[in-house]
Image (cartoon, rainbow, N blue to C red; front, side, top):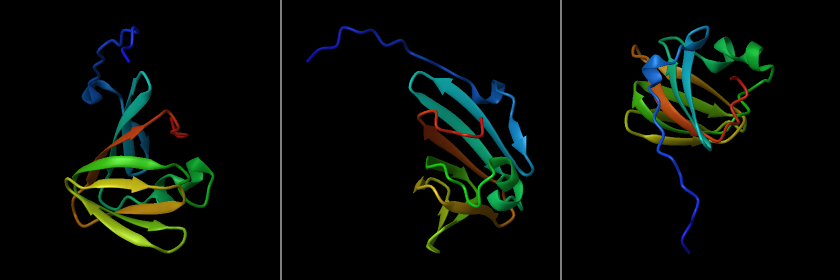
Length: 121
């Protein structure tokens, strides 16, 4: 089956997007047709429950995440008590209901792909 609809190439520069900052967590989101691409930075000492919980208004992060970690380490604990740590070049899929924080003395930076369901934008 051949599609007749033309899809235009798209480009965005995350460095040109002003960061949305909440405590020690910042993000820069490029909105493309059908997908948002967000660079998220958890500075040393950042923790979702300390930096974004009040803003989100929920006990845990209720957004799903699909992301590639570029640097640093992120520890994630799900509401059911399961835990995992993610580092450079690892891909993470996090369902809703989690807390996360930076591990060690290096900020954790990851790039997330979503379909516009980011409630913090």
